[in-house]
Length: 213
Image 1 (cartoon, rainbow, N blue to C red):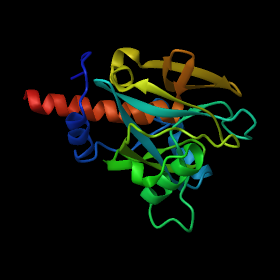
Image 2: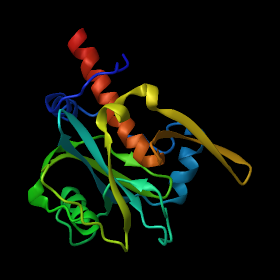
Image 3: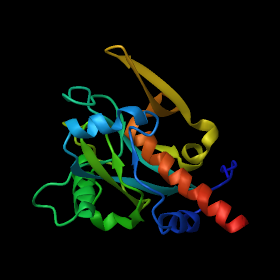
Image 4: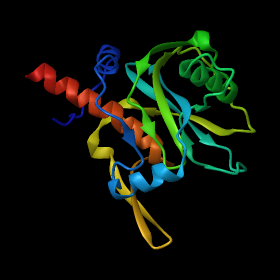
């Protein structure tokens, strides 16, 4: 069952996050033929991100960042706040909250963590745990210019609607690779970020199917 255009609520998000895992997701979901070879090349290092939801009037928005243009990797790309799980982090959740505070000035006390989505493997060698959390609407972003060029919000309803999910591709060294994309305004949301958002959308669709049946 696909989601229809509707106004999503926080109780629906809570219920979707509390569902049993639907299964590991990855950059290889649209390119299964290369998964085994890529996993042999890369060691999957642990990472964590925060899919932060913030209430605006009568709707929920997702907080995203645009990475600084001078970064050596993924410069200018749209991403959730987050990063590698460091040796000093007590857990993946602590890593996600630490990175969010460092990158956008979001204190852990300003987030209610609801739970996790399914783990996501990236083609660059990370096993990402995506946490979903509710952000205090009084929070004011303070991006670290060494890492983040912009903090912006996108309506959750837009991102969860399959009608707004596109399948794009790029060609490198004679090989075509497919990925999900969700262009919004002047922002190009794609790759792992779009894939993890699809994971939440799939949970909401499964929840709707369960409730209808």
